[in-house]
Length: 112
Image (cartoon, rainbow, N blue to C red; front, top):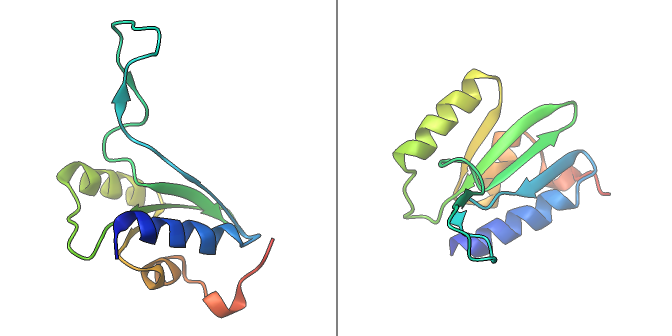
């Protein structure tokens, strides 16, 4: 499954839950439309694709990868820093990985 399709599947599944708040993070650099010389970094390198919180207040980060996708060194460093501070980090190759990482059952979804 392509990474973009898996990410959309995860966003739809978790977005229906009242016990989760989550958003997509785009990482990259760009120049303003006014043609200025400055370069803006949207998020730090290594930031995962999805960040959120699950009741009762546990922060989580999800890095979405296709079956053959590899976690880059900067992403692994971000994972270590996040987990040292008590956050949940999930390297997701499937929706099942996310359910396991968050310790939730898809059959007992808390709908919005």
